[in-house]
Image (cartoon, rainbow, N blue to C red; front, side, top):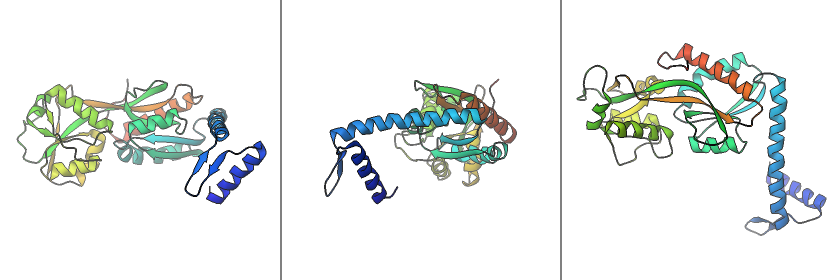
Length: 278
């Protein structure tokens, strides 16, 4: 909405309510006490309107109309190119919008009603969120070619002698990699190096250490980084679980079950290295 249109709408609302809602200065606009009360009530009205739209969509058929999806950055570039074309073909009336953010942000957006479903590493660890497992994928150690590492399947204890570089704080993949390192007695380097898996892998290619990469990201990221060797772990290999999360109160739970089934089918047909739930 443009600024003149917004000002006009606020002025019309003030006239309808016969009260001042905002206090205007040359530098900023403040809510009056009445404006604060109206804003709180308007927020609850908008939440109810969102629920009304959800309930109408739920009876129109599976995956019809708008669907707002949040995806974490360590899933989006590897999974979306596989699943989006299939969803478009299978559900042509689905109006999909995608928001890529870290776990904390998309979970907050989901609970606030600004997203309908989120795609992320499980568990979500947030009350009021229902989880649906999509697949499990192993972590792979990526090291410079010629690194002094045991041949064959790698024991986790091999991490104890390596400098493992990680993503910045805020990425759930960082926390998962730290758990693997602690379990193996490994040392994660104190410096924070990267905000993306692509940068991490390039740093390894430049000799800055080793890192842990999920199987789905491995082909994409190592293709653009020369001089690297992937090392897979001996069973039981460290892994992460990817799934969907949605509000437990959402009337669209049946739709999200359908979405999860479609995503599992796409992943199973395109990515051999993942494991689907039994």
